Length: 132
Image (tube, rainbow, N blue to C red; front, side, top):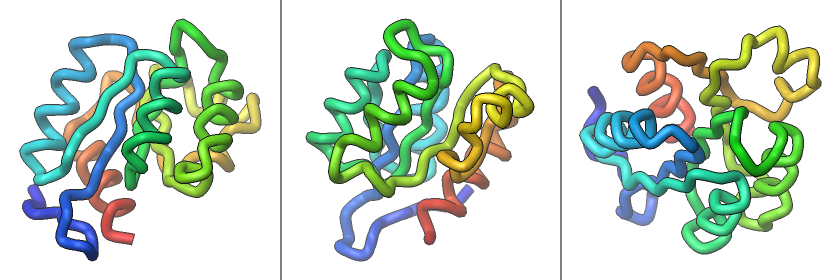
């Protein structure tokens, strides 16, 4: 695992997890924090947009099956926040990648991690995007 993923200002990079299943959030949070990342969390799309506006994350992990918004609405809500308009988003979801393509969402994502997920795959995608 990569350690000390600091951004150019010397601060820890921030990853926002928007996930309504608390056990997934806790496990991913632990894994990302162990990699040297500051991890923020929200359990709804609206909550995620509010956290993004306040914290300006470097990367967003977005569950596409949230209780408050359809995937398209969640992406729009995040992109409407000025500081996250260009923030990379990784779809963190049980949705089949073909369904993501059918909904024409694949262009919005910098990566897709399907659940159940492989921890190494998740960390590799996060680290690749954080280092850009």
